[in-house]
Image (cartoon, rainbow, N blue to C red; front, side):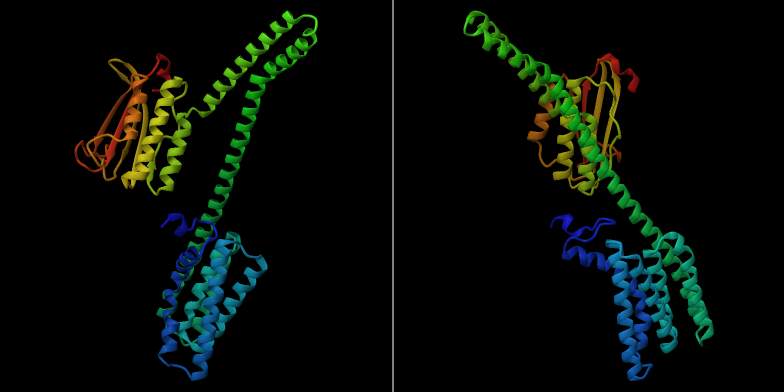
Length: 398
């Protein structure tokens, strides 16, 4: 089963029936405190009519509570509906407590939780203590044990204020998700603008020159065919050069970069539920070919971790090092998964080795997770270490 079908993101409404039930379960888990009024009804402490009305009142209260908290955390409801529902829950709590006794004081805890889950902090921070004060007042004015009142004060305050934190976390998550989407859109727009600028710079002059020479050749063709042929030859040369420039530009766009692959690694590992420790940035001014080789290798290594390792944690390190043969940039990908499944390298490792050979790089593989300190041959986890030689211009990145 796809994890996306069962996982409900923070601040996101459920998109299928299974997600609805999962979210309802998490919201309804608080209903465990309802055991007191349920037991009170089941013990037969009231007349038949009081038991029937109490049951209807309890079902109504639970239904309104679940509707308010479940719907509001998925998609905010109208403010007036929220206020009226909370007022209804409070009034119903008072009525049921006065009519049926001490076990029903617990309903005020759910009123406090509803306040914290749905109202802004500036309102909830005074309304939650008010609800708790009403609970205490109802308990003191009636014939209720003091220890029961004391036991309910802390859950009411803790439940209410903890839900304000959850609500703030949901709001922050939604804002971060929207900001991330905006940044991605701006990045895509900037990339389109860069592509448009590059194409204009590459093709604008060439196409203008081709147009001009085509018109000139057309005018020369009847009377001066030799000169027209020369113009046509120039047109062919300009168009060939333009084609070379465009191919070079497209190759540059397709070339993977380390910053892009590091960002992709974080996203891929997070999506697979693997805790990732990935550098935020790559060294500047890397030579083009070594950077491309390491970028391809990082992509392949992370893909192997996601698909085959069964790991819970993956660490990526990237650092320049000084060796006897000169300066190298070393990339390490280490996981705590099941380790390699055979003695022969797969196609992925073979491809990485072939790419490294083009830049005189080296590849070292070892069983065991270097992050946890397990050595080679432990059979737990897998570590991939690659290094490529660098020019002397990277000294500032050490």
